[in-house]
Image 1 (cartoon, rainbow, N blue to C red):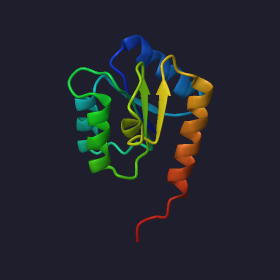
Image 2 (cartoon, helix red, strand yellow):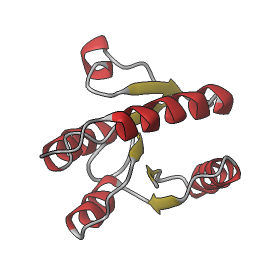
Image 3 (cartoon, rainbow, N blue to C red):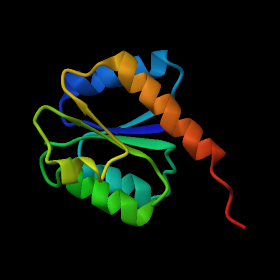
Length: 122
């Protein structure tokens, strides 16, 4: 399951449709704070995708909090602006807007396979 964090309703709808058409179950969140609450309430996504520019806490702060809560969960950032290389390194992948959905879906598949192949804790 993918947790997608996007504050634009139109982009959120497009993301949901494209991800579901590719066979993924999707939980949408309109902002980083809402997404953090979902994780605190026990949501266990295989991957998190977050817009960088959002009201409240931005995608980079959301990523930092997710890393603290779920260190092994891959995080993909989507942004309409350039990110500093040090900021890019915090994410498992960064995609510019407009989104190349074919490339995004390939990367999601790769990252989800990586999670599935990780050894289980003893």
